[in-house]
Length: 402
Image 1 (tube, rainbow, N blue to C red):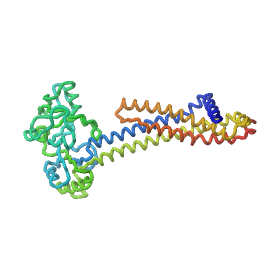
Image 2: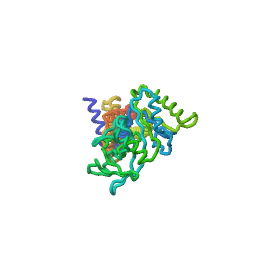
Image 3: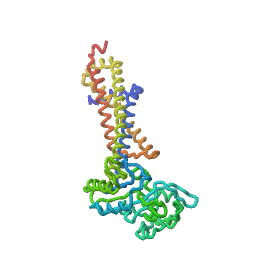
Image 4: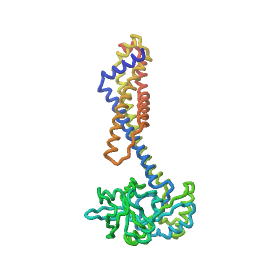
């Protein structure tokens, strides 16, 4: 009961000086709010990274035309990747379950009646569906007959469907690509964000022969997708692929490769690296805000000790011990930071909701962020509250009453 009385005395002192209490609390409020937002962005980014890896395929190996970079848009000027390369890989690299060559153009005009959009065009073989584990939600997929007959058919993504057909049924509808009329054979399942951060659903899929000979008019590929039987073999397969492609393309190091080999590990590491750099910067800013808030609170409490010298002396004269004075001022410090934590958590939660609804920033608020907020506020309250509490407790009652 005695300790509870001391705590109530501390609360009373804070309520008397509301403006001072607010200034002591402001730094903690802003810092905790920032901490909630940063952790929400970090968790959301982590989930987005895993979604990108899943979209890429955990057992996938991509051989892209064009070298000199790990990730980025395809190099449309490189024409050295061919169907013969895909066949050579099929015969030389073991423990590969699927090899799916693709011809593409990353920005082509699609027309339907008065509507026109820009989209990605992929020419694929039938096993593309298994290679990407990407099937149709309506209609049929690309078949071997479509490839053999250069069929003028296509599959469209969700974005293309919405932009060109709206609420209409797109099956058997007509789309013109590079002045070539194509019949919509199927609608692809919604996929979301691509490994590169683009819209995976803004694309149109054609039989590879139709794409290369009728629409794109090319003899080269944009990429070859391989699915390994087990990720344990992936590193060895990547090394074998590099040697095979360099041999076929007559590349002798240190000459730069005219191809890129990307795996899910590269995608995850790149995305995590960007996320980690951003998180470190944001956490540094949040930590700085909390420290500044703690320093401000400590200085205001030290000033408060000087202003309340007679009060402290009177309480000591009436029987309060040094421990009682120490507990009172430490309680004030903890109360300020905990109140700042509560208001800061509400601010951070609200800001996270606004970010999630008004921007494309991935945000996921979790209980871990609130646990971190409580821990941080207690740490700040104790660390920066000890010195003012010790100063108040050390005051001699006779000197304090003079």
